Length: 95
Image (cartoon, rainbow, N blue to C red; front, side):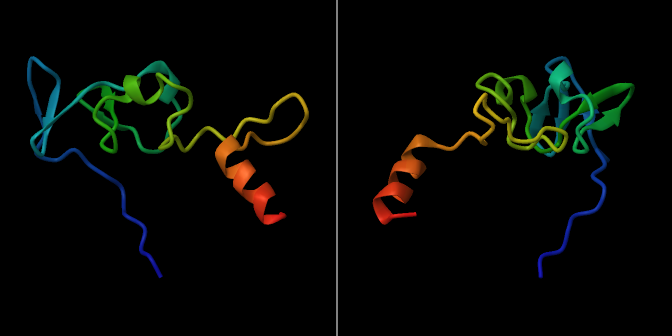
């Protein structure tokens, strides 16, 4: 059984001109779409995502796959969006 990680703290992080330096990685502040995510952590009145260093890039092509506050979207037909490649493989197998 896999253990869940506890609450992440940014202990040992240092604020620099580029952003927040944490364990050798420069973290950028979270974007507006990240509001409400359980992964964001506050450090000196600014929220950061310890899971992904550049949150804006995660949201550039749709929904961030690390977001805990967003669920799969339902299209107009009422079905959950499915990857077309996976759908074709399922159809070939007869599912």
